[in-house]
Length: 598
Image 1 (cartoon, helix red, strand yellow):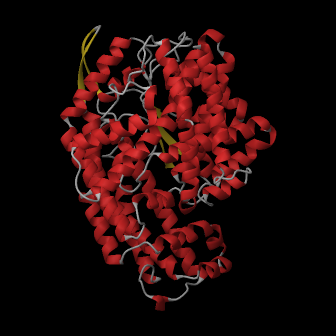
Image 2 (cartoon, helix red, strand yellow):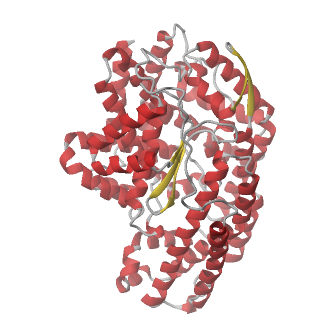
Image 3 (cartoon, rainbow, N blue to C red):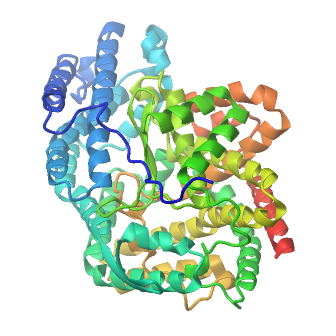
């Protein structure tokens, strides 16, 4: 196997701009700001967002000038924004990047207001007539219908401008505080091999350590650190949730969940069917957790043991070994998928090294055209390799979206997890087939760790967020109240699968998902994506020859149709609880297998 001490890669952003101080970056920053003004002038010329019915139906040429200019500007802005975010996500102490990120907020505000103007304008038009008159409009038909719906929820233009302006010093500032605080946290640990000072991301990675004492020490030190920062983080949470509530009311969404369903291109019946099936599965996941506790010699599993490695270690999954395994398995699906992964590894799209100032977790972002960047905090384990495969799935999705315009590529989170889930399943199934039986338990258990998070833990996060939004309508919540709501949600979902006295009351502080005002309920879409991806994988296994082309078409179309319509192409009814149960049955089979091995 590859040497475990080999340095982990850092991503290369220099292909986009040589540096913040480079003429290339400075010129493009200024040019994008100028392009925003030019597009605003085009909008003024055609009465976009004028709020005046007398403007009338635009000519096809006028509409196409508006749409083409919007798409071009959005594409340039995405590259600028992703480049800056890439710098601060991996180094919160980069003051120059932080300053430029702050400077970008005003142009971003203007761009957001452009989007509001466009939606308001479309809401005044006869969309069907426009689609019939213009090929460009026909190509953007789904965007137009959604924009017309969004227009019905907009406040008056001056109020939308005020709300967007205040957000910079409101929810955006509170979100940035959370990111800056959590990415800079340093934790003192008194470990068996000596005292160490580690960034929070590295401390949380110790949950995967084979030594039970190390896991417990890391958990206790983590909780102590969150406790020290609870007041600031609770203030962030309260401010963001309060703002979302106010705007959801003023825009007539009813609740933040109503906005989240619209943003994720699904209806309440779909969410209810899926979550009903998930709740039915809780006893199975509790069987898994009790079996794991037994294998660890415990009566009840503590939170800090949920990610403990099980079975014989098998491969150590050094980064280079993970790369080789991923490429081999992706190639078994399609050469196109393998080729994308090879580009990502060879062109340094991946930042894998945990280090001070780097944010926790992982993500994939598109930067330009078909190029993405992937951030993970890699640990040499099956889970580390699997996470890279997951994020490469997002990059493959971006590859398939690349030929589309920016207004055609907006993909809801529900569908954004499709390719990532699929790729993660590909490597899991291959690992279970190829590894010796004595090592299969570790892979199976690691996969069930992920499934438990995506079903049980996500359900706890959904329950937590619903309760917080509801209570926040009346008043602010203290850090202690947030902890108690979190513990109640964990007890209700994990049940007797975990020791009720050794849970994680500060998960509300850990997860950045709670601190995104523009995307409330950043939780249930992960469950949707996992179960939808498992359903698609079952179809792939049944008919691999015909699946690949249809699959790529699906990924290319995630911004062109609602989730129900895209699922229907594969014979899937999202309102049918039977579909969700069938996907969960795949997980139940793994649980049965693990319990038998235990």
